[in-house]
Image (cartoon, rainbow, N blue to C red; front, top):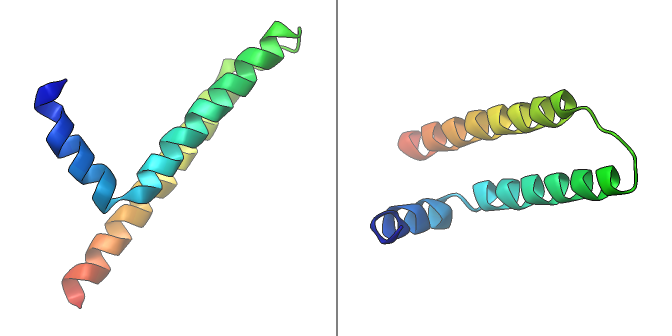
Amino acid sequence: MNAVEGPLGEFIRRNPTVFMLALSFLLMIGMTLIADGFGFHIERGYIYAAMFFCSLVEALNTLARRKVRRTT
């Protein structure tokens, strides 16, 4: 873990939206676990689809920002 601390920390500093995305994933997983604890079943496919979609949008945003930085 010490080996990836530096590069990962630098990546998070350059892309704070990725940090927020990770926090929102943790919140979504936590809420799903709480709902399951109260007897409300949420299909895992919905959770995975939402996470995939958000990750795809964030990847596209990151690529777009990188492209804008190169042109300016």
